[in-house]
Image (cartoon, rainbow, N blue to C red; front, side, top):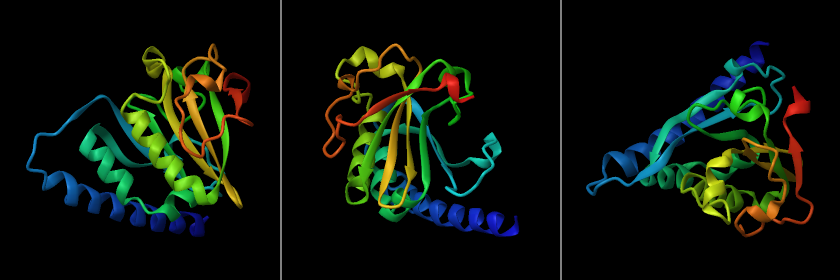
Length: 194
């Protein structure tokens, strides 16, 4: 138990360092007008080996991601080892990174298997597209997306795009992303999971 708490603290400190550096380098020193997003987003992490799935086990890395400058700064600063080895969750503000959340419960997710060498590029592209509301081929579907998640495995990661509905199950609704292959993508409903 003590080892898990210590590991959480170490991960939290490392990630917060990257986020703090990103904030100071890009946002505080910005001399131009900031560009607001259509919505606000929160970035969480969870240790892959932590068996506690209560909301308190998710650590908020950055909340109120609300400008293009914050998105770019965060995406370009978080090290690829963190992306490949941590469970990261980017969720629309007001939605927790849990299936049980009322806004996730009746939804599902597109689940993709991405090889490790492609993971950082895919994650960053998805992060940009999610926050910019361009992740869907049809703009009206963008508000149906609640977030994206990444879960590390041995030689690959599972990347999921979470929706607030299970009505749309065709991965063709997602805009093309280099190295995010639609073949093999599966849709999973959240409802049976809780």
